[in-house]
Length: 545
Image: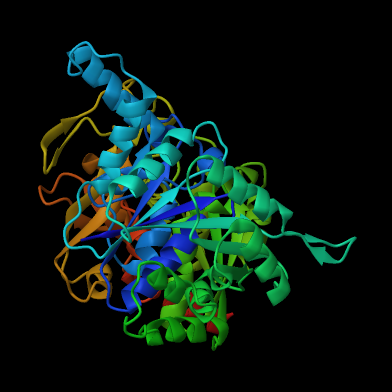
């Protein structure tokens, strides 16, 4: 019988509910329990696939092709459990499915209402697609009191009544702000937040109190008294120097023990946390450092490249070095001459051009590729970054008008829209001008590697890999031969041999471009081999300069 932990937030957004859910799941997992985490998003988009990264941050893609909230990346990185489409739902998806049923007549003429139809759909989602899990953690997006989240709160209230006693538990994440002028921590925002939650019929069992300063025991007792919880259930959550130190910090404060006590579990084994101790030791005690220049389009918001940032950190953990990331706006390079670009990139030990959409900044990315190729600086191109590496190579080979049809009409379409490809569901077809949402090549696809390639060696000599994709355009296979003559080797192709997946330059210290997103499968305990290899090459570069 699975036990359910419902995680809500109050006072303000961005308190770190996703990180808290991931950390708690990791601690329960370290005690030997099987866990799964789910995210309820109250917004009306069907999924975040069409949302600007500046609005929503990164779109995280699962193996089965779901475009989901970036918190699912935290879940996967902390637990190693691959997320599925059934682990993220939005109000938009709930209402879309309900309206489709109403149009088909599935409700037999009944009036369709928030209660019971919307709440029933939410409950079905929470209970669906589980096997032998011990704990299902459900994080509710937004803050308590938001209009958008009310159906989700009502669904939780109903579930807590419908499931068995001791089968559910409520964790509420709040803020205990420090007022500098008064020199005091204030508990009133937490009290009001809990009162708001209680007015919706949900009594929290555990309070996780975010704070910048230590919370004295007297203040914890005050919170416990006013919020009707045990003193031990008021868990301080101070700002941490690294997200990877959070599980150990929460364990020291007793979070996992208190959650288990709430379920009546008093004989759980102690958690095995040596892996987390090793990760934090590698993070806080590096034996060197490298600087990586990320030349991208959405560098103004770090969350837009959340998984990329973490994968670079994991590459540093694999090599026991600190990775300093220099975020560089690709669009700025389009306004600078060659000498200014060289001046900006020369201090970098490695250059990474990430994925993105649209023409803005593309020429700046191409200039970055050219710099890395000519100066023998380690280069890593991901998705659009690989495409720009191919465009740069084609221009070097004499195709002066080489470009992507994503940017407009071109006489040399080195990159073009995918019109048809094969997936596990069969042939997929797309047309230019069609819907944007959910119409890309999404999810895990296999690639066949050239066994004597550098990339294959980084994958341990593998001849077949599976990686996650999210893109609408592909490198045009018609340009493979002239690009290979120029020195760009196609080291990975789709199993049918039609779609380029990986390019590399054997005559370069480290030059790899991939059509997929390897950052989505990197973990602190298991850094992705391409990121580990890239940082190792950057470390070697740092010793040469």
